[in-house]
Image 1 (tube, rainbow, N blue to C red):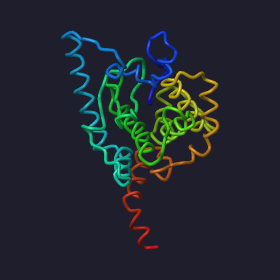
Image 2: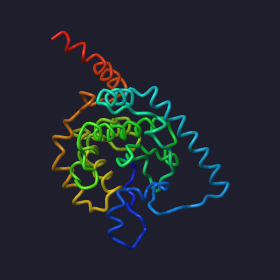
Image 3: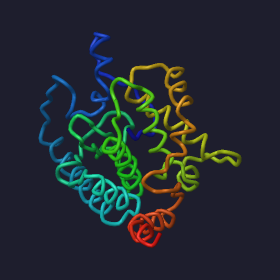
Image 4: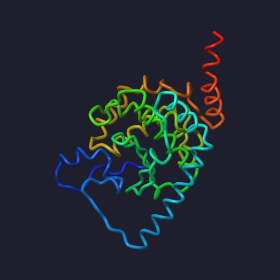
Length: 248
């Protein structure tokens, strides 16, 4: 789940069990369980405008972002081919959530009302594709094992460009020693808090327990791509990997 701030997760129901089973769906208006809304003509026009812009930016991201292109190739190689119309959905979301991965449908949700710039779309698509890649290659228990969720959030924050120097500068956050690690840890915790009804202490504990191993897991990039240039080199190396092995 990509988010700029940690909004409260779950529905407004008074039942605590319903909140615990929400798993972030309450943040996505079209996926709220048992909730139907009827929009007026103005809202329909607004949604059409947002949706069209979202679809255009998504196509640009998939066609031009070296991060996305590498992840799509890696998933295809793993037997999980991604189709734009099937595996991506532009929808309205609550709060400051930018996107999410719905493992029950293997679908990436892009929050069309919260993504307004191409660079933001590129990061969100990459972030959620990393979750999709993890879902494809590993037996991730998204709903019952918070450590699994924490690991994927660490990898997504680390490899998607969420914590690049440029991204941090736009947030007016600066640091020298281990700033990247601090950013990754903080964003992983915030993502967990955005979609799970757990307290900060439990989220931080889950992140800390798996941080070292998951932070150093750079698949399928083989490195931390700190820039588009890094991602292009990583994509080139991924495409040529069989050629290297054939010469060994």
